[in-house]
Structures are given as structure tokens and as C-alpha cells.
Length: 487
Image (cartoon, rainbow, N blue to C red; front, side, top):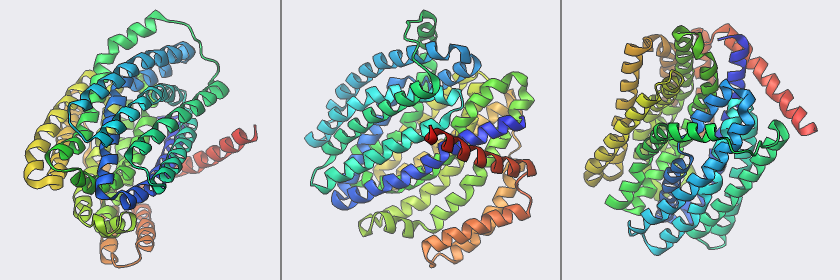
């Protein structure tokens, strides 16, 4: 990978990671208010609503975001035609998904209030699918900073609107309504950025684009839908096999883990256009980028997982309060899932870049079936703990199958080389984090982070060129932001 490619990759990762890391903390303000004003059951309702919207929004976008990134990155001259036609394609698919969601939840016999929230919230599928397609274009042309601004503004407005309605005495239906409004606001912001930065829509029907989207949608839609199912089936089965309150306890811990997932997710999204353009250079080039990516996400995720394990009681009490004490054990158990899941995200991009999206689909199908079966078996006797065990086994099986296939078909993955130094640094940090667990949580986190990176530098974990790139990208992002707001 050239120095310029590394700078571009890091710039887009930082652009996606910073607001994506800030947004969950902003969202915690909403979670804080919901958990205290609406209680465990209200938290459960909110989590169930988000799970269904995730599934049907994914269905509406047909999983084509990755395809759009890949195609636009390879043929930037066709970007305008491809973007406009994909958005129109998404409008049709989102209407179908909205109808399917309303028909589906009707037969699941939720209470009237939650059902009404589903009906209202389903309208957000339309702007959400358009947003995903537009974001794909920004990712393909490596202008992810505009995605970051749009997502940040959307999240701020959603949190403010939802907190206002909850504090004035309204419940899940009002939250759902505010979600719809903010999705349309976000779509307007993204269209404004597109017209300002990229150019006008080339609003012209292109048969070849629709044909490509239709031909590829079964595979990519399957990947997205089965992936979303195995990541959300736990909430749905908990709500039917246990209780809405149990969902609230489980979701409280799961949401903390979701914050930490932001960094590897943003990084993997930034990797795809780089993979797409440079795969033609040969498998060795792809192997280098894959191992680099795995190493970097492990550097980021290992200390976060240990921090959640050792400080779980303080984290839960700070955010949710005493009523969510049962979430402490769930957070301790769910934290290790961050490690294999971060690897799954990177290896999935490797498979798509190497045109093995059908294999990625098959792996996601296996994961969805395995997650459904394990959750169904384990939730009845063990409730939320059963859901955690089911998820851990599913993600572990997923990453093992990915590594086996890639090692046999593409290139060997040297896990020892990738993980050795990050594990040493994390182990050293973990000892301090555990022994100082009675210390003020924020002071503990700050010292632990300094210790972790101190150990990592001492054992020469960072390469010199990576340190230079960090400095260069930081300066470039600052300059770009200044130039944009000055215009």
C-alpha cells in the first residue's frame, strides 16, 4: 500500500470514527433519560423498535451499499448516473420493505402502543435507504467527512427531539415519530452536501445500472439481511421467549458494547474502496492490507474489551442507575465478543474485494441460522445470559470459518504476528485496570489508556511510517474542515 493510500485510508477511518465514536455517547443521553423515565420496560420497547427498523432498513437497501462503493470506486466517471439510479432503485425497494414490516409485526401480537410505534417508525425506512445509497457514493470517492457531519447532525437532532418528548411525558410512539423526522432531516443534509461537493444528480434512467443492481441484489441483500438477523435476533427472541424487561436489561449492556464496535466498523467501511481499487495488484497486496487492518482493529479493541470487563459495574451504574444492576454481569460476558466481531468486519471486506461475496453470503446464512437456533435453545433456560452465549458462539464460528476459507483459498493469515504485541500491551494495561478498579472510573480509564499505549510504544508496536501518517492525516483533516466552513 502506497503512502498516499495509507493516508487516504486513515483519513476516511478517522472521519468516520470520530463522529461515530461521539454519536453513541450523545445517544447515551437519550438512553439515560429513557431508562430513568420509562424504566426497564421502556428501554426494552426502544431496543425492540430499533432492532426491527435495522432489519427492514437493511432489507430496503438490499445490501447494495458495498456494491455501489466498489463500482463507483472502479469507475468514478459513471458516479452521477450510478448514484441517481441507485437512489431511485432504493425508493422502490424501501416502499416494499415498509409494507412487509407493517404486515410482519401485525402477526407478532405486541401491545397496541408498541405496534403503533412500529407503524410510525416504518416510514423512516424510506429516507434511511436513500441515505445509505448516498453515503456509499461519498465512501467511494473518499469524502467520508461529509458522512460524518451528516450522521452527527442527525444524531444530535434525534437525541434532542426524543429527550424533549420523553421529558414532557410521552412514550415510545413519540420517540418513533421523532426518529422519522430526523431521518428526513438527515437526508436533506446529505443531499445538500452531495450537490455542493459532488455535483448535480444525473437524473436519467440507465437500464444497465438497474440490471446490475437487480442481478447483484440477491447476493448482497442476502448478506445484509442474514447479517442483520444474526445481530438482532437476540432482541426479538428475548422479547417473545422472555420479556420486554429482560430485553431492557440485555440491551443496556449491549448498547455499551455497540459503542466500542464503532471504531472497527468505521475502519472496515473505509477499507472497501481501497481494497476495490488495489485488489488488481495481486493477492500479496490484499494480504498485506488485510493483516494490517486486523492488527489495527485488535490494537483498538483489546483494551476496550478489558475495560468493559473490569469496570462494568461502574459503567452500568453511571449510565443506567441501580435498576439495571442485572446488566453488569451481561456486560462482563458480552465484552469479549468485540474481538472476534471486529475481525469478522475486516475479513468480510476482504472476501467482497476478492469477489467472494457469495461465500460471504453463505457464511452469513450459517451465522443467522446458528444464532437463531442457539438463541431459541438458550434463552428459555438462561434468559439474557443465554443470548450472550449464543452470540459469542455464533461470532466465533463465523470468524473461524472466514479464516479457514481465506487461508485455504487466498492467502494464509498470520494471527500470531497480528496479535502478539497488542495482547502483551493489553495484558499489562489490564493488570492495572483490575487492581485500580476502585479508583475513579474516568481516572482509571485515562491512566489505563496511557499505560497501554506506553507499553505498545516500548515494544515497538507502531511502525514509524504509521506514526508519520497519523500526524499528516490529522493536519489534513483540520485543514479540510477549516476550508469547508470558510466557504
